[in-house]
Length: 167
Image (cartoon, rainbow, N blue to C red; front, side, top):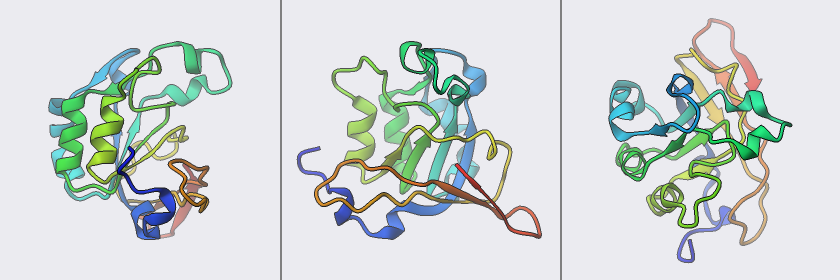
């Protein structure tokens, strides 16, 4: 977004917080993640800083199907709903929250315009089913950048011993 903040202008706290893990893998290839579907997860979303959407698409990593096939995406109303939840960001295990062939990127515009960060290409298979997760995805600090590599980490707090994994 031309008027949006670059990553170096955002505080480090924007890139970490409690995460709600939402398994959308059962929706199927080419599915649209709707506001109604997300509202059914409301009790978890309203306690979270981040929503991590597990699509199962990471299984296709390093294959042509990762980019060529239709992964699940957010519709515009779902993006608006996520903004209304007061989140810091949204993470996905596929290349984008919008279709790869989109020319308008509606979910990007709504999420970024609402002050959320978007973290893409995550490995989420180890966080599915976890209830108490802290998520960290600090980007490299490049001046004026609208995107950067991150080392995403999930800390599981639902066990007496703390356990961490790369997301």
